[in-house]
Amino acid sequence: MFKQLLASVGIGAAKVDTVLLTDQLLPGQQFQAEISIRGGEVEQQIQGLELALMTRMKVESGDNHYYSTLALARWHLADRFSIGPGQEKRLQFKGQLHPETPITELPVRNNHTAVWLATGLSVDHALDPSDKDRLFIKAPELVSRMIQAMDELGLKLVKADVEKGYVNARTFRSSTGCYQELEFRPKGFGLFSINEVELSFVCEAGQTHVLVELDRAFRRDGFQALTFPNTSSVAELKQRLQALL
Image (cartoon, rainbow, N blue to C red; front, side, top):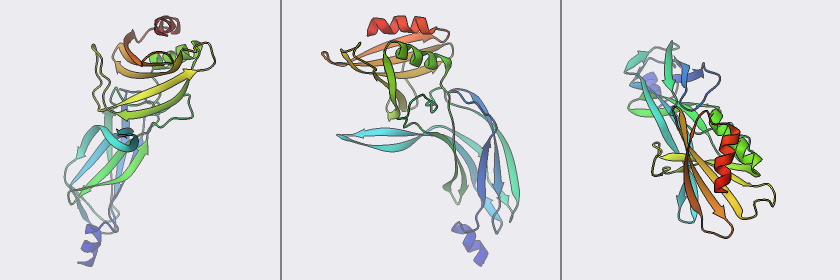
């Protein structure tokens, strides 16, 4: 009786751990993981096993802001099962990252982007976020070439973050409820009319949409929507961007 009470309040409860088996990750890429569940001091009835792809996003509130979390994708891995004291169960899992998964590996110090897998055991109908595994998401080649093109045009990447909301343009729209914003600023005085340029990407198979926000010194902010084939070279990207700047 006493041990059953301990289990119901989480003392000696089952623990879960997720091991990622895929080294290099890109937005939209498939991945493999192994989930290990180890029993505690007593037998337990687990109501379900869940996995979620999570990110942290900035939420604007008047003149202030705060950070919240958002699930980009969710997977139900297992239904009700029991696990004995000290018993270990292993599950193999294959999933796919959302194509709009924010990029964490960027050439910038001021990077507020975080992406992780949250694994939970649902015990007595309560999701226990007992295991969080940070993911390292590399930039797709088109995005990397875009950063290089901006740099060659005299604009340095200075900040990256994820904000609540959607990227909206006439020809495309994001879908997750958050979007990543890459902020660039002039490296010198050659682009004296530009204070800042912010880029947001919506990646698709074969092409990438880009929303460009221009903050000019002597004009109101403006938005431009561009679409590039994923095979576009740095020279081609520079040509299109230079026409905007």
